[in-house]
Length: 149
Image: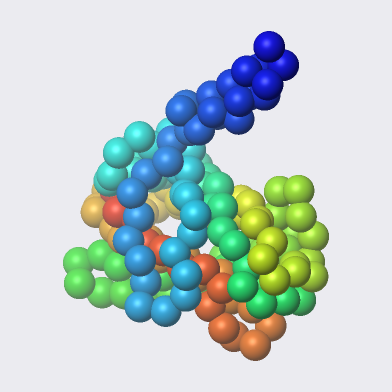
């Protein structure tokens, strides 16, 4: 009975998670999964005046001493870098259950909190997240379709 309960506790969160399909980047490994809060299908709604929250599960292939999020937004054919707030520029501070340095082979969960300003126009956007290490190497990368609402 206890093994059945253990399996149930592992499987149920996966069933009810908001895991959405993402696209692979040209460089870096695709995450194991991306759970965008409140999004069950793309494009994900990015509500103005709120943070878009995503949990990114990825594996580390080499030791990582430092980790930073690099975000790009593409809309109307233009790709621009998205400046993360200063308190969110160190991805090591936003790891769930892990700390930097990260060991090769370690599975990690990163919490992305992307501010969606009230001033943003309602528009379709592709958001790309690169998690970059101390050597500017891309550890994990994906993009997801969204729309500002």
